[in-house]
Image (cartoon, rainbow, N blue to C red; front, top):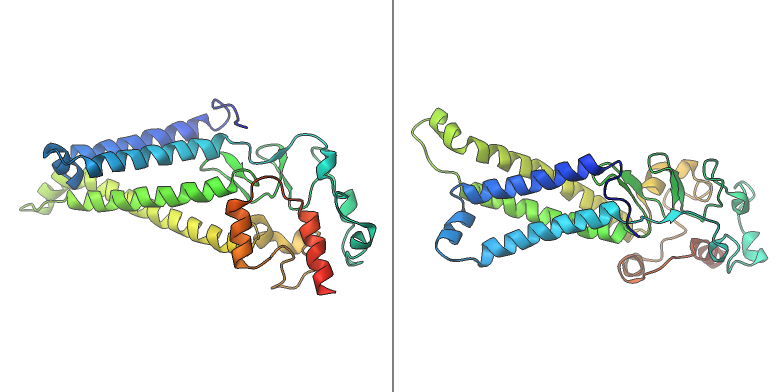
Amino acid sequence: MFKNVFGSGFLVRTAHVILTWVITLILFLHDTELRRQEETGQLVQPVLFVLLVLGSVLLYFAVSLMDPGFILSEDRDLQFTLGVTEEQQDMIPPTTKSLRQRRCGHCLLQQPMRSKHCQTCQHCVRRYDHHCPWIENCVGERNHRWFVLYLAVQLLVLLWGVHIAWTGFSAAPSWQQWLRSDGVLLAVAVLLALLSLVVLLLLGSHLYLVSLNTTTWEFMSRHRISYLKHCGADENPFDRGTFHNLWGFYCVWGTVVWEQVYFREGSDQV
């Protein structure tokens, strides 16, 4: 389920963890709201903040080291023909390349629908979304929901960190003196604000795509994907409505045979 922690992303993961705890330490060392509460014995918010930071780090490692849905062998029970009748197979438009013979040119394994080969990970990934350099792992069928949860927790930590840094700024007679006393805290606040904006955009885009039951790869490259390029610009054969899309993403565990969803949608349109 988890990959080797000392793999190719070791430096990225180490840098992430070090940066996280260094920033946390700075927020506690300066005269911020956290430090004042700690000194007066009001430990609820400091403890909650540390636990939230710890939770974000654990989620980061879970998403980073988790198997995103690598296809490592020919699973007969997940092949294209599972649960799909010949009549349904004939419903593929004649302009579309036959999906029965979709094999990866690198792995030489049959690719289930919505999977893609990742050049970085050197594996095909089920329900491939994208390869994230931040976690040095693919985001796919098995870890996508955890990735979205991680983004939500990380955004909460970052916004709280910006607020804490803001409470640590103090007045000074001149800009030079102010920068000497609060320059490090200012740099932390700017960094946290920029990261908050990035994470907010990532979280918003992923929630939007999840509500449509589409992936980043499908959204960006639908004109090159064999099972989507014949569809209209606003047509998505996997869209089952916002509620069902969100329910399936967050509450349905296990592998989905997307061929069945694809053909069921096609049969509803006939």
